[in-house]
Length: 175
Ligand SMILES: Cc1cc2nc3c(=O)[nH]c(=O)nc-3n(C[C@H](O)[C@H](O)[C@H](O)COP(=O)(O)OP(=O)(O)OC[C@H]3O[C@@H](n4cnc5c(N)ncnc54)[C@H](O)[C@@H]3O)c2cc1C
Picture 1 (cartoon, rainbow, N blue to C red):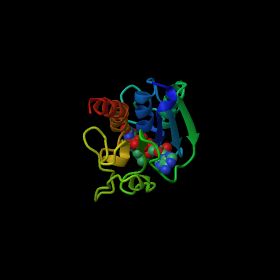
Picture 2 (picture 1 turned 120 degrees about the vertical axis):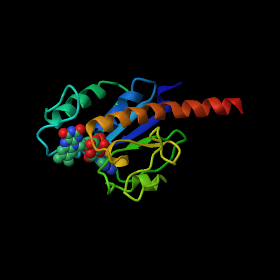
Picture 3 (picture 1 turned 90 degrees about the vertical axis):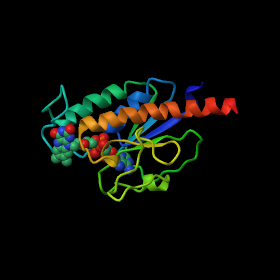
Picture 4 (picture 1 turned 60 degrees about the vertical axis):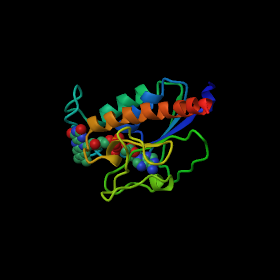
């Protein structure tokens, strides 16, 4: 498979988005992270409940994580806010991370993702929305707002986004 064949867009490059990216990154995919640089815990001096870096400054966790993720040559990063989503390619994957209860943007809705009564993006156990190729992870889709939960759902979203096009290609070959 050509590296250019799949291009994933990760909207939100904080805990959840970065974990989703490294889950996808080492494989043969090109990826773009778009991040507005406003993580939910940006104003707190210490991050707790996350093992090993417990109590350190949240921005330190993100700085280190970002430098590791951008070490993959397949991953590009833009410091900006994504305003619109459009499914123009067959293998479209977007992983959106933003504030809970009120989503930062209506991109999930534009891409036909369902929003719950609580304002969360609705996902199944695999972090998949009802819209094909659209995954959500982190605070945007759970009431358990923590770094640990964000990275756990990020890894699931990344793994499933990686798997889905392969499964589709396999099933298409069987037809
Ligand atoms: C004061 C405070 C203290 C906290 N303390 C702790 C703690 O001690 N331990 C703990 O585990 N959790 C803590 N939390 C919770 C923790 O911060 C969140 O659970 C965590 O940041 C969620 O990660 P995330 O990746 O889902 O989203 P976020 O970290 O909020 O990151 C979302 C990213 O997406 C970007 N973004 C959003 N929309 C767009 C768009 N349209 N285009 C481009 N980029 C976009 C934002 O700019 C941001 O960078 C705290 C939260 C607060 C507010």
